[in-house]
Length: 365
Image (tube, rainbow, N blue to C red):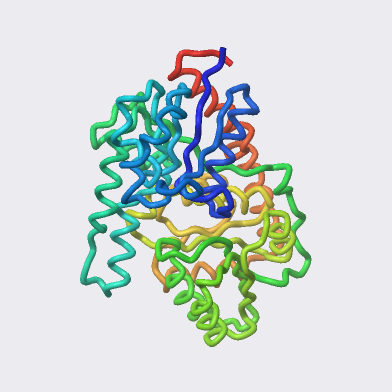
């Protein structure tokens, strides 16, 4: 009999974030491989919607939790809720790190205070420690973070790398456009650890006025950023709100080169952006900064450009990429698609993840 699991998200079922997408997709892939996995959205179940009350009130859901052989927690903000009930649940607890919460909090404070404060908030530190103490196994997107966890004392046999993947049937290979409408495209959120200020400063240094950039993923809270971009760049930028994945592919079909401009900070080291696999699957060259494993993949496959994580270096890389011949860019894009097929297919990632679940539970599908 296969093990039965539950995946806990700290957000609502309606969330369209990359965080929520990963949780839902991993649960879906387990089911496809014969392992039942339910979903539980803490934000939809007050008082679990607040970190300050979640761990104290999880006892109310103890009967439910006891039904499962494994409990997947999406990031420490979900894992910390199990702190007080952990010893009363028979199932194994898997903590998906989903990046480095402490480093992200520290970076946000550093930028918000102009460098005066460079430490994480006490709330984030407490939640992180609670989640770590409740876990039996750890999942990470990055081999860098896996090495960090092991160096902190986590048993190497208890850590599993599970990448962010891509649906190759949805994100199909796209022929390289004859005359791209946009030189560059950026897709994603606009938190400080995404390096948006870095990207803006770099694009200001690109002297060729014909170089245009498409930016997708704006939410209502990004209105001030949109105004700032329009004031700086006018019609050199096209700004699009969040769209579904099918519409996203339509938009990106008119772009030549995809961008990731994450900053040189420890917060970037533990990540593996979802958009990287999606960019690659569409057969486009990718320009990344040398801050995480994506740079190693780009260099290994020769499928794009790698820049140091500073505005002047990024600007130089953008200039180089913008003036690279079309046939060279098209060949890079074909190699990017091959990389996606070999490493980032959700079907392959899901099968490997399912095998890991069967291994740690000692069960068979």
